[in-house]
Length: 116
Image (cartoon, rainbow, N blue to C red; front, top):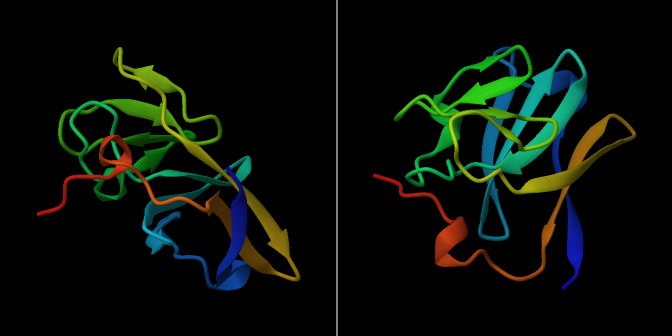
């Protein structure tokens, strides 16, 4: 299974609140800026498939707005709850543009968020 890089946004235009949710090739992607830099994860809580992008990014972690599960955005590791870790996506900055690599195959049902 391969991956393809996709340009997302200029680093200078990244939202002030420190997070950006988007869809890339069928994947729900959440990019977060922390004191350690930028990271990209699947925008889907592994507890009940809620969109994580509705939560707050604090101290390097995103909190699920549904039940409060917390995930470290740099690693995807669950740090508040006993849930599976998030899928991480590779991220790079090229010429001031943030790019994210997502799998060439679309996400399966277990990797898509429930959206209202």
